[in-house]
Image (cartoon, rainbow, N blue to C red; front, side, top):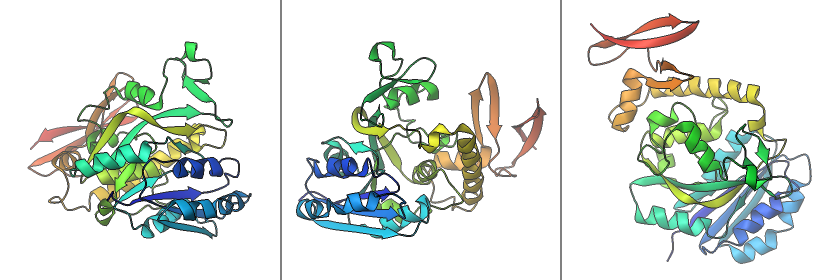
Length: 319
């Protein structure tokens, strides 16, 4: 029998989209699914829309849980959802996105056949509020005209700005993710990894990035080079607010540095240990940056701070 997949949906103020999200799970070719939906105190009719599909869910899935709570935020909601899961794999989908029919089947089959991986994800297409496909032009604007598109999928765009192919072994490594998140949406996770990693927290408001950093400390990730997910782009997306996103990124990175110093060196992957000891070197706008991870370095080396154009750089020097 196929492994049980737990589909979790954190829902908040998506009355116009949540039914389409649930319907996309109802349409999955994979059969052995439980669905767990938690409304985080929506102020609109999101919960009402969810309840209207409850009987369909009960008939389709092996287990259906639909609950609501007072608003507690994304981190608490996700932790509550994960705590209710019984499946060997967990598939996370926001209440305004859409999974294509074979998404769960293809991702679950990959995890079943590759025990060394704890996360698998495929490419995304963008859709707007009306469900129309969007593309990205050369100026990084979202457009509907395919002929003027520079990027047709989220994955194409992310690979270009990160300067490596997601089919490479680099995908999902801590060293690359420490710079910033690039993992698309619609990922499936091996539930057992949650026994090792830090829980979601308000101290790390970029939940997706924080999760990727935790998983990459202990296990591998895989990118499937095909579109299996529709990521809805609309005015209420947090990603649209660049100032807010920068604040979230700074706070998430700060918290990550704190917990990285506390992890057991014998349990994390070798490349994570290298980041912990030496930081991360990468290029941005033509300048090399090294971000310090901790104030000291093992193996008889130390970090020397260098100021350049009001930017603190770090170089490593031997005693």
